Image 1 (cartoon, rainbow, N blue to C red):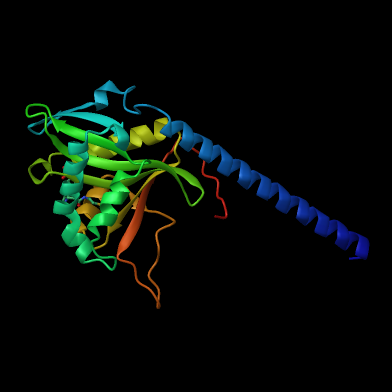
Image 2 (cartoon, rainbow, N blue to C red):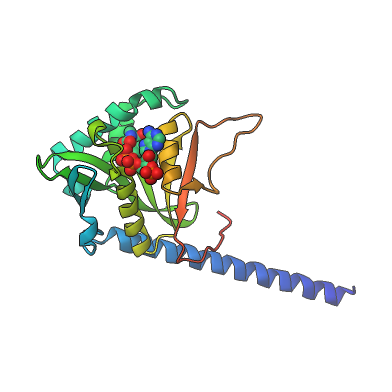
Length: 232
Ligand SMILES: CC(C)(COP(=O)(O)OP(=O)(O)OC[C@H]1O[C@@H](n2cnc3c(N)ncnc32)[C@H](O)[C@@H]1OP(=O)(O)O)[C@@H](O)C(=O)NCCC(=O)NCCS
């Protein structure tokens, strides 16, 4: 190869790199736009009346979806309390431990959305999911931070139904996937998410000689959306 050919090869590579960078920036911008758009909807569940009710296995519930700032303060307090009741022991077993104040802050941040199920008879809240529309490793996602049901309402299909509602809100707003974190020492939740057809996400950390992780990141992809890798 002579000098001229080598210069040409280099400039081709530079052009390719620039084009890839441009495509990556465009993909990120498009993702951020979709996240912003999803977050600006007053009620992402409004368009889907059949998913606002759950009447199966002896349960009769209504579901509603709100931003944290629109939740009644006592409902947020109930959610924080339920999270502690269900999860404190799991967190205490983990390397991070249980930090009540951090959890309260996380659950109260402006970006938090809540899907809440109410018992139709008592009108009391019985289950919730704290979720967010967000960018995660360069992808537009619905991140499920929590799914918590009161003990007496568990194992009646409501949890699975609420995951389907999250998927509906995610995919109808063109999110690439629904993502969540689960403790490896929570086998009930692991089995549940497996039944809901969640798989280990590419961003889930892998144990190695230096480090082990007590959690996995699981996800379900939006089949209607082509995946496009970023280098983030
Ligand atoms: C985990 C949780 C959200 C599941 O919701 P749920 O309403 O109880 O589960 P569902 O009745 O919808 O179950 C859906 C499927 O998962 C299975 N499943 C649910 N809990 C299970 C358990 N403890 N052991 C084995 N399988 C379980 C069900 O058998 C069902 O299988 P199917 O689809 O073949 O019928 C709920 O039990 C809960 O709030 N647990 C405490 C908090 C928690 O661990 N949250 C998850 C944190 S990541």
